Length: 385
Image (tube, rainbow, N blue to C red; front, side):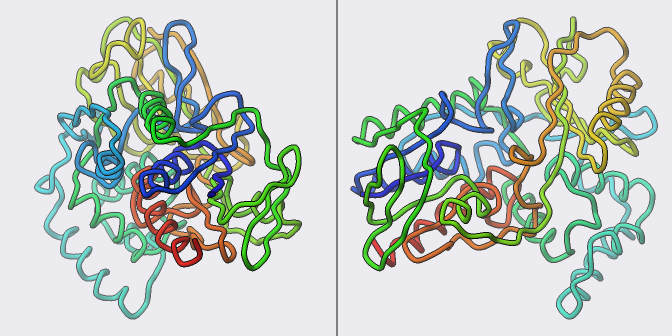
């Protein structure tokens, strides 16, 4: 019997993989709904995502889509066309390799060679670039990873860059994040897996041959998959762990009278605090009773001040003719990422205990990295179960 602590995306992916391989699986979630930061709640007829945007970074081609297919979960993903545009000096420019100066591309490969011997933070490279390329890089980092160029090394960024070149740009799951979660739950239960909502795990004890969880009482398992992060996992064991800094971000959900983007891709924003926006109702009108525009902004410092700046910039870009449905700030116990991209810790926490989800990602963007991390974690757990 394997226990999964937390019914977020990583926990449900792991539970499905384990059940598919024949293991008995029980998932424990303290919230009254599964999905964590990868689902949605209906508000005024709009599916407001609880954390992640209604977008999968590599669409139907990437690690998450492949893993869903592997475990038998069918989710329709509409690949974005165009994949992305860049708002530069009032002009929308489709993001393609040819729009970047040859000099910037040569500098990229020069820094790649240097990084084999000295892996510098990405801002060193960014500051050597022309204004256009530097501005796009900063927007991409803010939108995709909720970080700044000084937060990640060049080699860590290169891992993510390679994945983006390989699998390309984003897609939108029909039904949004919640549709993915609902399918994972249904698939798990069809294989005999159990999900217990409003069931908080209050303690973890490990011996050589088993792991015990304190739910209402202590219960024994052959192994545990934790989807609550390294910090909380340690606290449940009565321990402490030093972690790198978390990612912080703000998401704005707007109702528009008419489409602003008029496509299903990302609009990256140059030289502003807001990094980008998408309009997922162009792919799936059922995600809202009207046009839904979601805007993402990484931030440091005071959240209230950041929101003031972000709203002002949204009005500058979009205009004033919108209804603000939600402003969500992600930090502390519910961050964008528990650990900044590029600083993820290992998937093995203790013998028979592995961690999945953000903070234990593979080298890719957000949920794509989570999918890679889940496969790695279960490979490691297989040594003991």
